[in-house]
Length: 154
Image 1 (cartoon, rainbow, N blue to C red):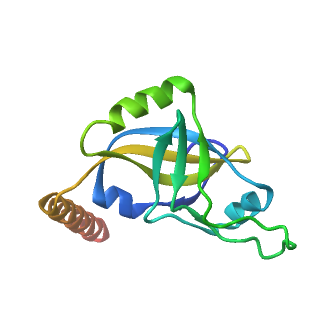
Image 2: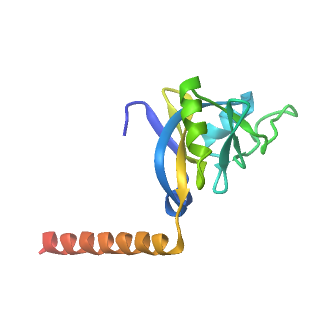
């Protein structure tokens, strides 16, 4: 784990449903109370996705709950959030996403030196047999870990 990095939430469903080809670290343009809600861990994005609109990357279906200690000037929890990336990265992402079968998926959200960051991945969807292979590999790994633990205990 990197210095000054605290993971707030991971999208485990994304790693199960997609092959992650490339990943990018990006900032998020948030409103005042959204930052406090994110730091509390009040985020949800299992069905989240990102898309490129007018050379800007926007993440949708990314829910940040309202901050409970705020006044009436709270944020809209389901508004699309703009992701902050370099122009060259946006061009690279656009070329990749225009290919058939690729999409942008948020992988995790974290704090890096006090700033809210998100990792998005250029992903390709898994078929049912790929998912079965993933489950099989996970079960085999778990079994080998159990065997190693039994051997160490004696």
